[in-house]
Length: 185
Ligand SMILES: Cc1cc2nc3c(=O)[nH]c(=O)nc-3n(C[C@H](O)[C@H](O)[C@H](O)COP(=O)(O)O)c2cc1C
Image (cartoon, rainbow, N blue to C red; front, top):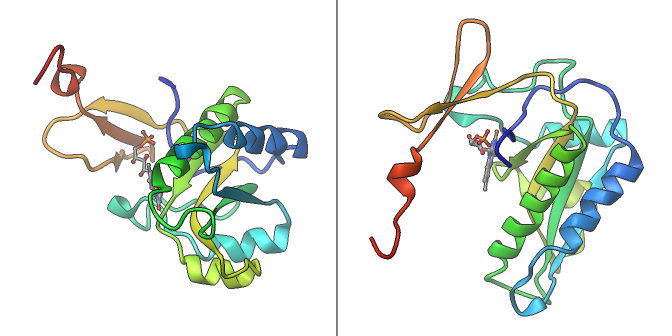
């Protein structure tokens, strides 16, 4: 949890189907409001589909286009997170959060980096993957072995991450004292 960072540059070594299955299992077992379990997952590791999906995603908006995966450093797999709206029409966002964070941490345990992407052309993804109408594409998790090592910084006056002259990403985080309240505000 403490060493995890969002990764946007990836080595091209494949992530095994076994590990991809483990990630979905960790999402399946996440907490779910009223235990409704409205989420399902499409794993993409096919090369052509990866290229098409990549074109639907937006990266590191504060520094765009500098934060985009460089050519040859694209993700090697993705999980597309679906919500069955027949099961739950609204209020499923916390389920998505728990499931995605479970996958992120399970991946990191296997030394696999990830980037949670909400800034995506979800309509295009829905059509491309022939997702039925009663499912909503919520977000995408991009995966692969890291080819960068972002570093956290104490936040000063801005939440905006930046790249230094060597191309290393620095990510400001609020101080513990600024977010921690014991026994009331
Ligand atoms: C709900 C959510 C949506 C996000 N969407 C995107 C996105 O569309 N593109 C992207 O590059 N990063 C996205 N991120 C990653 C954040 O930019 C990243 O978590 C933040 O900069 C802090 O960096 P860290 O994950 O290394 O701590 C998203 C993160 C969350 C939690």
